Image 1 (cartoon, helix red, strand yellow):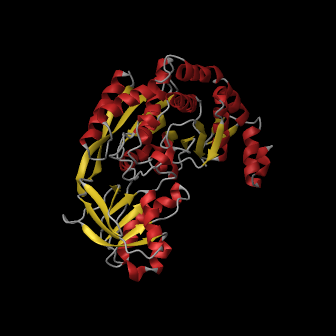
Image 2 (spheres, rainbow, N blue to C red):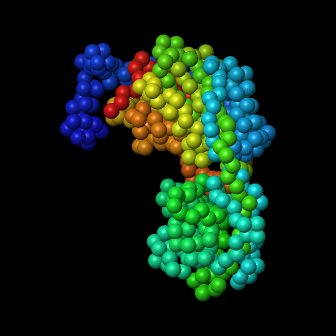
Image 3 (cartoon, rainbow, N blue to C red):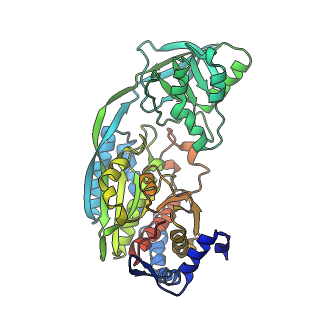
Length: 472
């Protein structure tokens, strides 16, 4: 028995889950775990119907085709841009035409930053025009640019050791890629750490697991009390080249020009649609992805795919004539790339009803072939999720991993609401992440079909079960 590995308290708790005696919560009898298993098993035929419709039936490739139409029409969707607002209005109309309930827009104030023209040219030891992408919220350079000698470092620790050398220079970070969560700190904090030691600007090696001379942008953060300096990402190839030059003792000089500018916050919206619950309409299972993207590529992978399989989950349920007991709610977030701005404002508006949220779900790691679900919740809730995922045996995606997360649902998870995220084959994800390469060419319609099936089965079953997922 796998449960024997838990602590004594956990064993007692899980024994009660499996016992035949009713469990009481606030005087109300709760189902035993065996009864819950039997209830979930009854959804086998519905799960097969969803899978067949999404993967083999009339709905196959629908999420891919819907996504292609949007991103080919409006392109990338940067926070504060006209293209993002055009995409939101298109989606509002699409969701209404799809026959979903309570389609509406919830107002949000979001950051508005534009990169403008930008360039970086290495002047010494040879002339070389570099590919760059300014980082989100960066300030621009003076019109004449910044021309300065370069200091190449591989870590913040090295920068501190060589702090006297950094004053008046452009700091180039050539940090090795380990994984995204560890390496991204250089993109986020690189400008601040460089400014603290007197640098004029910073250039960050793109946070990417593979590069074909591709710069990868993303958000960066300034810090109160620290001078703001221009910052941009450069390619892996250029960062490594300058590192080799520096190791040989070459003097490296770069001219950086950036027109980047921050504007007052703009008006935007989170886009919401529902299938209203038949028995507990005030209770919610939320599925989501973010509609905004960076201003390069098409934003198809990050996070068009996640947004569109979330829409597809509701479409599949509706097409089969299903109406779960509790409300199935779709939210397409705005300004996720700027730090989950739209999601935070949604949480502030709805957190008073957090006890009515059974599960929050977010897909923001691509829609390649799913490996399973990441999940954060109580032991009992995890055991229930494992039973729900067993319904996906026909497509061999049944695993439940630890650490369900997502920038847009973490507010809810931290408040104790169970959370789930789609875990995909991430091998290719950071090849294209935040780059010109994030286009429809990355997407695979068959893999999106499978991802949509997983999303629909899980969200529907959790929304239709008699009881909400238990919390800690």
